[in-house]
View 1 (tube, one colour):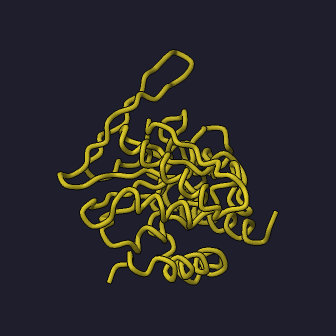
View 2 (spheres, rainbow, N blue to C red):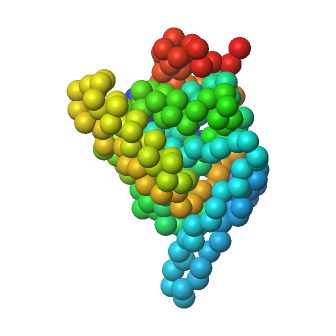
Length: 241
């Protein structure tokens, strides 16, 4: 395991254990986390079948004049830090999408057994920044050619994915992928999955706004900061003033 991944996993585990210790003294394992949906989003519903639970997709409601994008590109700490910098983006929430388990915890998602990806939901103003521009930035600020992997982070939870909310988003996603492939930005073909949005669960509070809240943390300085600086140079015209 690489040093950066060790640091990240240790920091995440430490933060989670500290949270557990504060809330449930003497308890060593947290088995479930129920977190609120982003503002304006309907709650997830669950369907019981004696031995298992399944997730029923529900529509995501957004304020008038706004749109929502759901994407996954490896560690959500890294992706969140980029999209928070963009003008026209109202809100960025880290969470879990595309899986089979209700209200998964970070530890469960990290096991790779829930089917969820570490993902972002981005609420944005299409009059300021388009969905196409968001996806173009997304496709060129992570490696969309490595299956179930981003750098040292390996597993289906780190897959590259676009969870489209309607037919137009699907069309734009497929077009952007074709364009980036045609431009040969990467030596290998893009493997980003384009799949319908089905569910969303907020990540634990300590994952939210992580880079801005922990700029001196080891993983932030070694991995996220260089990526953010490169993004800011490349997409200066899209940055908040």
